[in-house]
Image (cartoon, rainbow, N blue to C red):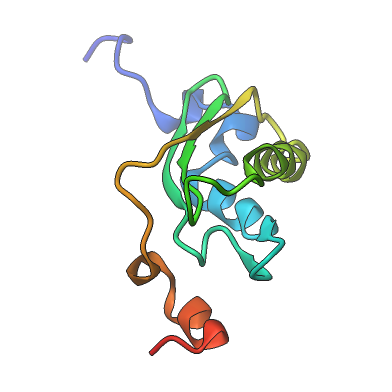
Length: 116
C-alpha cells in the first residue's frame, strides 16, 4: 500500500492523551454550587467533541433555563481542562434542547439527592 494511509503512530502523544473520557473525567471536578454534584453525574454534559488539533467543543445544559451559573460553569470547565497536555481551545456551548430532566442523572447523583 502507499504512504497515504495514516497510522496511530502519526498521532502526537499530546493529542493522543486528549480523549472524550479524559475530558469527561476532568469535567467531573466542575460542581453545580447549589446541588453539590458534578455536572457529569448531573447529566448536564450532553456532548464532547475532541478535534485533532486538541480543541474541544462541549455541549452542556443547566437544570433550568433561568439558572445564572452558566458563566461560572464555563469558567470552571476551561480551568479544569487547561492542565491537560495538548489541550487547545475549549468551547462550551450552552443548549436547552433536549431539556434536562432528573432521569439524565447518574445513579450516584440520584442517590445523593434522594431520587429513586
